[in-house]
Amino acid sequence: MRRRDDAEFTEFALATARRMRRTAYLMCGDWHRAEDATQDALVKVYRRWGHLQRDGRLVSYANHAVVSAVLDQSRRRWRSEVVGGVERADTASPDATLIVDDRSVVIQAMSKLPAGQRSCLVLRFYVDLSVEQTAEILGTSTSTVRSQTSRGIAHLRNLLATPERSSK
Image (cartoon, rainbow, N blue to C red):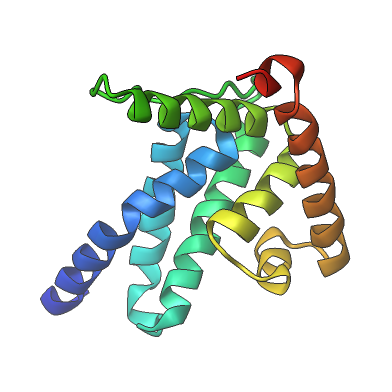
């Protein structure tokens, strides 16, 4: 790769790695695994950098790469229960505490979803992909994406509507 391409890739990686890591985290529920998946995805993007069009397809390819990396990890070596967690805010502000608590509740609920539902919800609503794009990335049909998304939303509603949650 030429020096200019290296500089462009570095700029791209710095601009997208954080979002890729968050996407991976939402899918797997573990920051260490998310970091590994992000690194694997960036290596894949780097290897194909010269062939990729440097437009919207590049971001799409990177999204696809990080999702594939998470799915590959789950098929390979990670056969443990997904446990959700959130890094606590350093501030003691009540508003910040509520935000962290809300995030923690949602992330824990997401970790209880089956992998297919969780993947569909992350790609559809966090990465903001269409049904068709999500189906392409996951290697499944659009009807499967729609049904998994619908079931995932219903499951999340049930998990988030627990009595102790409603009383807050």
